[in-house]
Image (cartoon, rainbow, N blue to C red; front, side, top):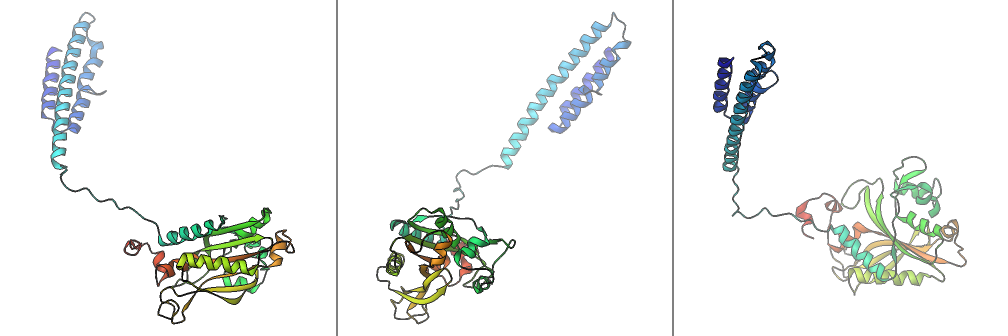
Length: 339
């Protein structure tokens, strides 16, 4: 038994010394000290040793185990230090090099235009309201005086989820929801994303943003509408901006109008930017139709109001002289970093 233990010890120590990495060293540990290891096999054979010899053999086995475990730990520490030294030499970092520059984002031109627009109307006492992008047909059309089979539905080429639910084509449903609350007077704007089945080109997109406004109070007239929008235009495009209202038709307003602003590039003289006309169309507006007020349980004999709708992308395109709407959505840093 002594000779067998000596042979195991010498063999184990030689294998430990020859181990070139931690994986090989672990294999040595398993081969000698594992459940099926050589030294473990000696312990399992103790039943064949005479009772009077068992304490002596047991002591010798434990001494060999302790020596092997000690050498394993020493070799493990040595190999770990060697591996670390090798890693540090291969992965050296030159701390004198300049740090990698972090790329910091900034506000999108659409958001810049929206924040400026909101600031203007908040300064005039308006509140900013939001509503769902997935809307009931009733709020998107019927409550805005656009019944079933109305031609205005065809104009908007709507995305329907089912016959009663639609991706909103305008943010006007937010106005209806505010009127239904019955808390008067109302002075609000409703910015948000809207959806129409438009072909993608330089001036159209199936998904874009609108900012619609609504005022409901006693004795509101067309003069209030014109004065409000004229002040907005001067704040947004410059103090010398002039406005022009052209008759139009919207189902939910009567009378209705399109509003143009004088070209802030040429001052109204005519240039490439305004296509030689001196004027640029920016929004639609009108006095809230009495039937729309009635459907929201507001008495049109006591209250009146006006509404307007602004295409946010149009404002951004005009303000920053961008000639293609697609640039706002293509995420090209060469374009976005200009703002």
